[in-house]
Image 1 (cartoon, rainbow, N blue to C red):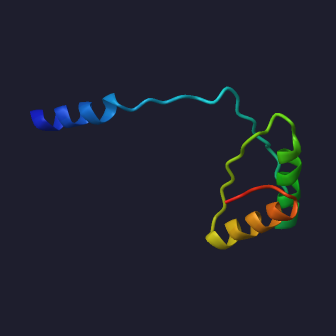
Image 2 (image 1 turned 120 degrees about the vertical axis):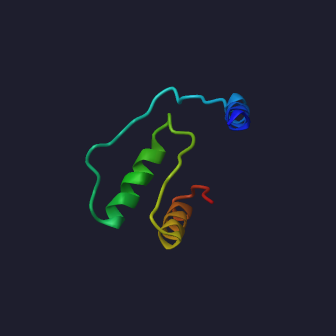
Length: 77
């Protein structure tokens, strides 16, 4: 039992978390995929947005997002 407690302590001691300065949430999102991509491009054009993390449900969806962003001259991986 004592070894388990030591193990937990050593795993969490090195973890450092930092919170972003601000988080923006858009409560109403478009339903269609085409409109979502248009909204994403609009958001990325904002001057204060320098990087973005975009989540998709599938790899196929991620590939479509990357292709659409490439057409708009954005670098995506």
